[in-house]
Amino acid sequence: MPDLDALTARIGEEIGTGEWLRIDQDRVDAFADATLDHQWIHQAGPAADAGPFGGPIAHGFLTLSLLWHLTASVPALVEGAGMVINYGLDKVRFITPVPVGSRVRARSVLKDAAAVEGGVQITNAVTIDLEGSERPAAYIEAVTRVFD
Image (cartoon, rainbow, N blue to C red; front, top):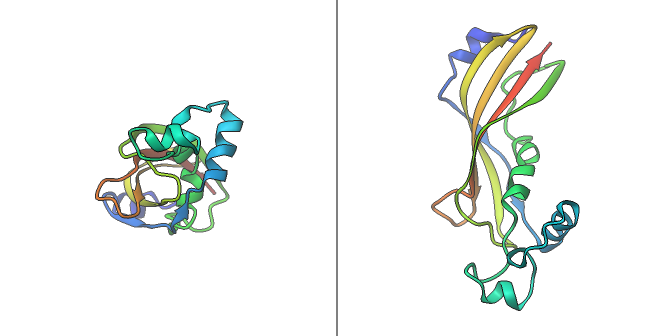
């Protein structure tokens, strides 16, 4: 089992910051096709350009769906885990719209660690930074379970 004492000693600590990822129109369009969400604010063209954001923006759920990719470049809390399971989300907030063409990255803070049968449950408070913005794109409390 991962070392629970070592993890709990790190609660509140920033684990790290991931790499930037550009959100381009092709990614937004592919997400719209996959989810059948073709709202005009996500589509390039005159409607989005004249809309409240001055151009198309990414879907909030697209930003959320990139969580695991964005956190993959953050240092691992537990090295050599046999299995890591996405257990769910405790909180999700979409704070600032993500304009198409902008870049996002994940910043992770260990919020909690607790024993579960055969492993440890870890909750990370993940902020999705939006390059050039004082406000983040999103805040997500992600829960994973780690097993040997």
